[in-house]
Image (cartoon, helix red, strand yellow):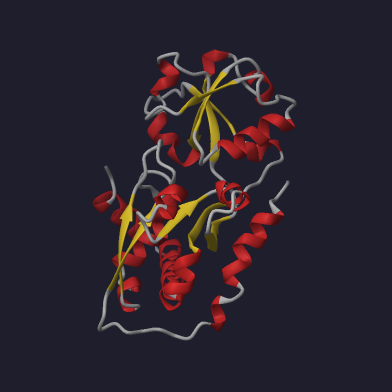
Length: 260
């Protein structure tokens, strides 16, 4: 499997210094922050939901609003443009760093990306090589991983057509595209019928193992609110520890409060 060394360094950039930050627990003053997701509400973000539910953020003097994302939104852009204080990103964080965008990684929550290209089973497309000459919908948040997978399969940019991403996967059924980016964690949503209509082509299955669901913030946040950064990261990780130890409870919370 190929990991991303630069992304490992990116992830370590703040993790390595956070232990040196002094403890900040002024719970008499509540600071409001926004966390921008890079997808719609789902178990992938369970730790953040439970950090709210169990009061881990509140214990640190932080009130967190979680913003879900549409397929056409870029969580990094939302962060850098000042619409949120923290965000969730994928391998696109590496691209953002090469563009000198002022972001810092706080933690890599998921060490295995659920990203896949979704194709109809009746399309005859089974491997990345079968996408030569096809139409593929991609957004900035998933372009890097998919383009890299195709290139490794010998399919270069220009040998397929990249289309702006549609709001949902029904673009496949309407013949607007041959492939649509999706997360395998959403398979139950896509395949509501007893027999699946779709096939999933995962970069992971072709030697590319990208870090995913990376908690990020801006350089300015680490400078201007360094104690809050440390506290937000710690409370988030505490939420993840609780969520993974109490899965049934966590699922109930998601279904009750984050199920659209």
